[in-house]
Length: 375
Ligand SMILES: Cc1cc2nc3c(=O)[nH]c(=O)nc-3n(C[C@H](O)[C@H](O)[C@H](O)COP(=O)(O)OP(=O)(O)OC[C@H]3O[C@@H](n4cnc5c(N)ncnc54)[C@H](O)[C@@H]3O)c2cc1C
Image (cartoon, rainbow, N blue to C red; front, side):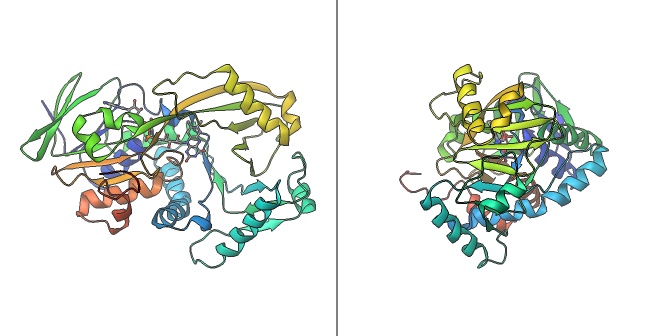
């Protein structure tokens, strides 16, 4: 029987980054994944890293801003450790303003961003400034809200770099290995029973994304997570089209390298665990994007992606201990922000596990009260 300090269950962006950070901090770690590393929701992500609005200020917003601030440092470290490029770029983001109410809101957002020391800069651009910055985007007479610190990352490259960094840091990596049961000795973790045998360990971290509540009915009592299907497209053309992440309503486009344009995304909360991409949604995604960037019409489809975003009851992740069982931890439910919240999650979960404390994680506890839900 194999013996480790800790088992991380689930090898998406969250499990990979937690396993890497835990191993770097000296723990003997195994990461098990039921399919392939990074192959589920994380493979559908486009890697847009834009900050939460200062109009929705909360502990979560502050954590999200912090995560984006430490992203470049973690990106650099991962590139150095893995020897691979992940193409983190501070490209900025633009929200196109098409209605007077949006313009009013954007003014408030820009004003509010000056009041908080950690808030990202935001400013309004006129129609002319917008046209100068993004000549391939249909100019909006009301201009745009610009956030220069928003960034993007090549998600496939980041996942590959994390797998390599895990290996180099001594994580035992196991694909096609499903965790079937969390083993307990009284109220203490004693291991994980998998389809490939038993692993002995005193600590377990659940990073199973949309499948976290299915792991064990016991987990569902503390942390209910449901899948919300999302689809996106990657198009290919001859020339770069945009500099920034350009958003209009729920649609956004973003350049990846010189020839690829990523287009997001649908939100389909009633699709259950169905992960298949569908033609009707693809058509809608393309139509929405072409409406503000007509040159996309001549681009061809390179990839059509679908994944299950893990959503908790209040749409914020659970990161921390499940206190009722000694040694059981969770990092799941990141919904639309798994990549942008990755540095915060991995850094502070690892701090909690290695030092026994992390004040930063208090807002993410599984025992938080969620309005409208009985816990
Ligand atoms: C179309 C789309 C676009 C997106 N764009 C962005 C974006 O631009 N920026 C951003 O920050 N986020 C984005 N997201 C959200 C982001 O992809 C998710 O928040 C993130 O991938 C969640 O990561 P995860 O590791 O928790 O889940 P997953 O990637 O789903 O990983 C969980 C893993 O656990 C494994 N697992 C489950 N049960 C078991 C078990 N019993 N045993 C072993 N393994 C198990 C699964 O196989 C899976 O690989 C997007 C999502 C979608 C769908």
